[in-house]
Image 1 (cartoon, rainbow, N blue to C red):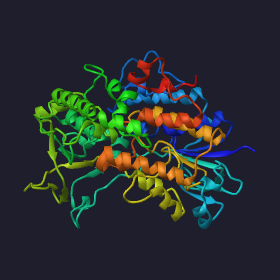
Image 2 (cartoon, rainbow, N blue to C red; image 1 turned 30 degrees about the vertical axis):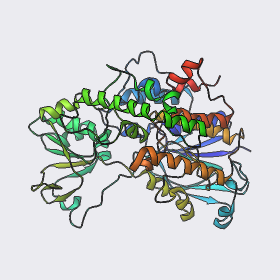
Image 3 (cartoon, helix red, strand yellow; image 1 turned 90 degrees about the horizontal axis):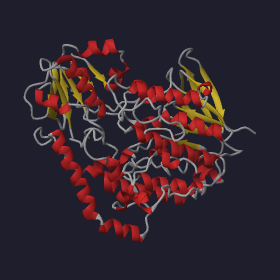
Image 4 (cartoon, rainbow, N blue to C red; image 1 turned 60 degrees about the vertical axis):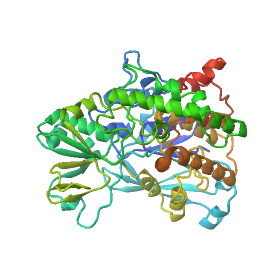
Length: 516
C-alpha cells in the first residue's frame, strides 16, 4: 500500500523533504500557501544576500553552476539555484500552490491512550494502521476548503515568516497611538520595488531591530535618502555582526566548523573524557572567541560607535545570531546617514516614537524588524490542545524536538527547518535523509523516555551556551556532533574525512555527507 506523506511549506526544507520522500517510494502531497517555491527567499528584500558562504549553502547532490563565483550571493541567484534543483528532480508537479494548511487533526487513538504510550506512536514505528492525519486545507484562490488524509506529516513551515513578533506596549502607547505609518519588515519586503522605494523616499524612517533584516532595511533607507533624512535604528542589544571574511581575513569555518573546535565545548550526552577535555580546553575556547571579537571590533570600528557587545562571540554563534553586516554599513553610521540608538524600551505617541530616557519623540515612519513567533505558528497548526501543549513544551525550555525533528509524544509527524544552524540548507538536507531512512524502517526511535532525556540534555546545552536565546533552538556551534548522531542512527560512518588531520581540523560541509 502506498504511503501518503503530507508536506507543509515549499521552502528549501520542504523541497528537500519531497525529494527524499520520493526516493523511498512514498507519495508526497505537498502544500504551499504562496504561488511559488522558495519560502523566505521569495519575501527577502531586493538587497538581501546569502549569509552562509556558497560552499556551505548547497545541495549535496546538485552543485552550484560553475558560472556562479561569488561567495555571498543575492537572492535572485539563490532562487534560480533552488528552482533548478526543483526542475532537476521533477518536484514541481507534486506541489499544490496557493493552498494553506489551516490545521491538522489526528484521527486515531484518544488522548488518554496516547499519553500512556512508552514508544513513539505506541509501537515505535513511523506509520500506524490505527492512526492518520486529517489536513484542513484552504484554497486561497477559490476560498474553498478541502480535507486530505495522510499517513505522515512533515512540517517545513520555518520560523521567519507569517507571524510577526510584536512587542507589548502600555495602554494607548502602541502603534495605534501614532499618526504616522508603522509596518512590519515582512510588509516592507512584500512590496514591489516601486512601492518600497515610495514608502521610504524623502522620509525619516525608524527601523526597530538589529538583526539581518533590520540592517538591510536601514541600508536601503540611507541609500534612498542620504544624510538629509537619516535612518534611525533602535536596538536593545549589540551583536557580533561579521564583516565579509572571504574578501579579507581568516575563515571562520576553519575555526568553528570542525571537530577540533567542538572538543572545546561541553556537548549533550558526551562521556566523561570528552567532558574533561572540554573543561581543560576552556582557556583555548576563550582565546578563540576573543580573537574573533578583536578582529570584528577592529574591522568594523565597533568601539568608536559604542557597539561592542557584552556577550562573547561563542554565545552569538551558539544562538545562531551571526550574520554578515551589509557592506559599508558602519561607514554610513560614521557619515550620519544611519543613526544607532540603544533603546531598552520605547513606545508610540501621536507624533512619533518615545525612547526611554529621551525627552522628545523621534518623528518618523516606523518599520518593525523584530522577528517572528515561529513557536506560536507551529503550535497553532494543531487542532488538538493536547498536541499544542506537547509541541510547545514547558515555558522554561526550548521546543522539545528529538534530533531537532521529532516530538516524542506526537505520532507520525516530523518538523524540519524549525531548529536553526549556521548553514541551514545542508542541515535540513541531512535531517531529511535521516527522516526518510526512519520512514523506510532503516532504524527505529528509542523509547519516549529516552528521547525526552536526550531533549533535556540538548536544552541544558542551549541554556549554557546561548543564555537568554536558548529558545531559538540552534545547533550553531555543534554541527559535527549533531550530524554524528544522525549518521549513527542511519548506520553511516560519522567520520567523513580522509586522514586524521583533515578529520579534526578541516571544516565539515554538505559534500562531506554525500553517501559513499
